[in-house]
Image 1 (cartoon, rainbow, N blue to C red):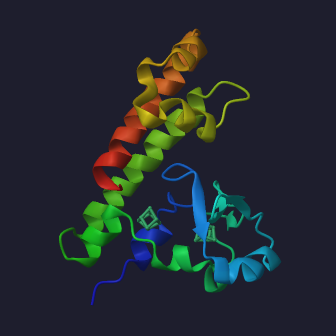
Image 2 (cartoon, helix red, strand yellow):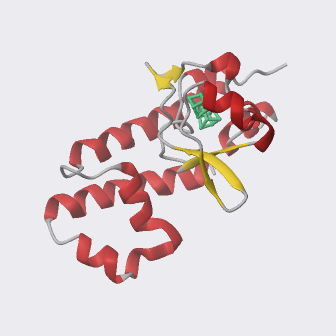
Length: 161
Ligand code: SF4
Ligand code: SF4
């Protein structure tokens, strides 16, 4: 039986705030997750902690055996395809490496004071033509960072979401 361990150990993109802005916490495990040191927040009925996850360290989950249920059950599209036999591990690893290289380009061009969360917020809801986006990108360095992030987002949308 195919395992996703090798793919996920080489990846971690679902823990660093690139694919998602938050991780859902089930109400019944709120106390357990808070006791692990997570900063659990609430919006309406929904509990979550913000990404990038504070428990992602040295390229892996530092609380792996105790991670939230939503982390245990999460499968991105790439992992689903691997587990379904629709993708070879080598192909999946290549796609992960491409995403990581694109992410490096994003960080290399990112202006001081910016973050992945800021760029994700700028681009969410197809806001490319919105005024706040356009007024934010008035310097070549900022435009380069956004362009790199758009290319990364395209890659993530195609292979991971
Ligand atoms: S993004 Fe997908 S492949 Fe990468 S660690 Fe998360 S589930 Fe695994
Ligand atoms: S708890 Fe572990 S698996 Fe869940 S988001 Fe954080 S680092 Fe990733």
